[in-house]
Length: 158
Length: 178
Image (spheres, rainbow over the protein chains, first blue to last red):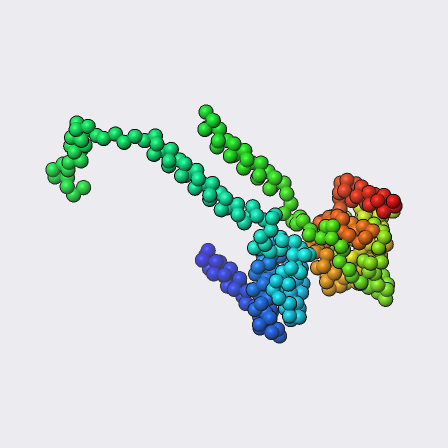
């Protein structure tokens, strides 16, 4: 029963996705549409926030796609279009924020943490190396170790 | 002893960050338009479509641009407050009727009252894109030089009005009078 339900669900999703593709492609220049799709996958829909502009069905996303399509047709470069949008909606609209002083921490923070982790690891290892003293085994200890390691007769296969 | 306090300290720092994060509204995206010139526009007026309204008409005045629509549920909540504030006459409120049907918008105003000096009809939402609108209602406070000084995303609340918008407008008017 669950399987059938799941199958139905998948089929429904699939038909919705096809419907959207068809709607986007109708009567538009495929080259423009391709650039539009590529661009809008990099952009966030501000209404739903966790969806890209390409996926969102929100009214604003539709308007912004229309706006981008017209700017592409008018011969604007991707950079100009991105600038147009960030001037109005801020960096938040970009899924990959630009590298500016306010986003330095975002971009370089992880590397900073990695470096800090490496420093700590290195110092820890060095400290350990200093505290652990090499103590050679005495002949008595060596004998006992050999005894423990010796294979008991009849248990070779274990 | 100090060693055992380190995890606690790390935990406390984490708690502080999470507390700040949880108390922020992710829908409030800081507008890059603050302290930037309000985008120019010229749109037909809602009530008299043969006349236009431009942002440049408002040069020399401190005014409010409120983005609204008859289909916008939160606008309906905000509406009585706007009427109340409009009656005080402290700041002139202008409306930007966002992606609305003219009949619906007019019916809305006659049913609920009209707090706006006038509303401009942005039928295709183009001007709203220039203003970075992503969720009506949104409210802009614009100064004498046509610079956006404040933006409220979502409905204006009594708190926002009395603590932020009104004092800022009074301050701007004082500076302008000098």
